[in-house]
Length: 193
Image 1: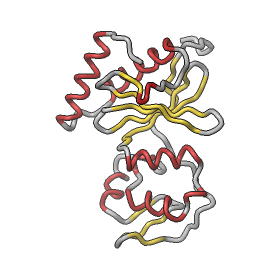
Image 2 (image 1 turned 180 degrees about the vertical axis):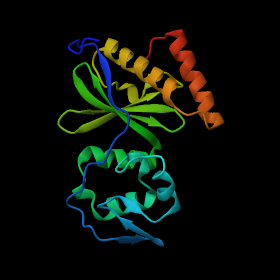
Image 3 (image 1 turned 90 degrees about the horizontal axis):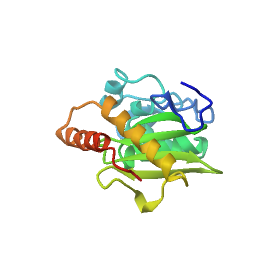
Image 4 (image 1 turned 90 degrees about the vertical axis):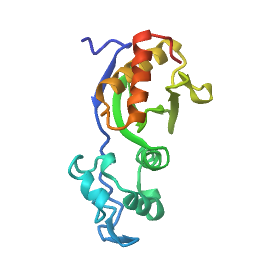
């Protein structure tokens, strides 16, 4: 594969690791009845302990709602803009996994909603902006795609639909139905975007 090709899409990372939060105290905080350490990103709750079995340290998917709450309540200004956005979308919009891609010589991040209702593209201009592609309607939310070129948007969505089809675990019937719809869109090769 020629890495100098400006039409190329390359998977750089298959997960998002939260950067070390040096501006956050190393002391424990309390949320509900749990001990939370926002600096080390750990919590005494069952959800967090279960997630440690599946995800590496600092993985966005490992973060429980207690860590999220402490960070957003007490340390919002200590977290970089992208991480803050991804944390919010993980809990409010059910973004389950975030990957990093090199798309047309630009690094972007992509979040997959847990039931594959949409994928969200994060792209940096001056600030981080995000764009949502609605899988069922095969359209961009608010008709706002991430790139001006419809060809680039089509290539990106085709890549992401194939990525979703190949890598998401079929554990729920709603997810299975979504993956069947994604598969159909990939097979049909319909224009997307």
